Each structure stands twice: as C-alpha cells, then as structure tokens.
Length: 170
Image (cartoon, rainbow, N blue to C red; front, top):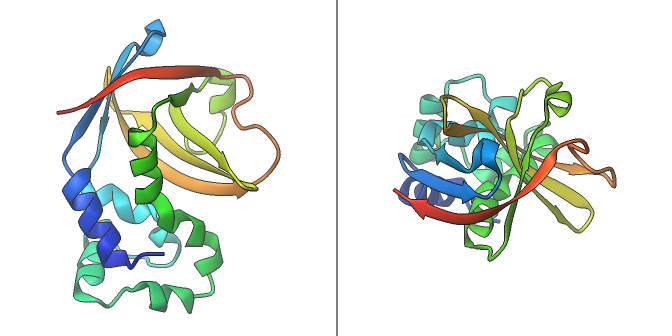
C-alpha cells in the first residue's frame, strides 16, 4: 500500500479540478459529468473518521508529513478506513477498464444517509467497493463516499445497471 503523500500527489495530478464527461445509452443519464476536487480526497480516504480537521488542514498535514500511513496504523479507527486507502487505485481502475458499469440508483435505494445518485461498484475477493456520487447540478456529480464492505448481498438491488459508453476528460 502506498504512502498518503503519494496518493495525494496522484489525485492532484490526475483528478484535481478535472471533469470526466461520461456518456451512456440510458436517457436519464445519457451524458453526465463527474467533477473532482482535491478537498474530496480526505473524506474518500475516510480520514474524517480519525481527524476532526477540515479537508484543507488534513491535506496540509499529509504534505508536511504529520499524517502518514504509519501513524494511521496506530490509530484505533484504522480498521475502519484501511480499505479506503486504495481509493486512487480504484479510480484508476474504473476509468481504465474496457467495460465500465455504473448503478443509477433508484429512488427506493436512495433511502440511505448518503443520498447517492450514481455508484461505481465492484466486487473483489470477498469485498465490495463502492464509489458514490451525488448530483450537484443538472448533469454534474461529485464523489461523496468511497467504502468497502464484506458482504455477499448485492447493493442497490432495485437500481438500474448502466454501461458507460465513453469517458472523456475535459
């Protein structure tokens, strides 16, 4: 597993202030944009479960070296976030995959605290990884959560699975 500063630097280089335009053949979301911002990363990594600071302060502490993977491992809540530290790898995999499937979350499946609209979902070994997006404007969505669960249960069972035809980076 990589160091936090490496994850921050990669996110900055590849995703920060970038828009990914996604097209599908499903009319409600035939074209949508995913907007990334560096301030999203601490939450996606689960660092809010360990630090009460705002995202900018957490990022500054990672850059200064006062927050490191080694220090995280000593925290009692590390077990809650260790699977989230693969967030950038998951993003890279999503956008590099030949076939990208998303879940357009039905109203009945939105009855959760996150109020997710779209989710990228993948099963690896005995875990399911979910990158959840929430709509911020007509066609724009932002990542609001990334998590892993150990479960054989299918997530968002009443929601539509949609193939992404193309992704372009603005």
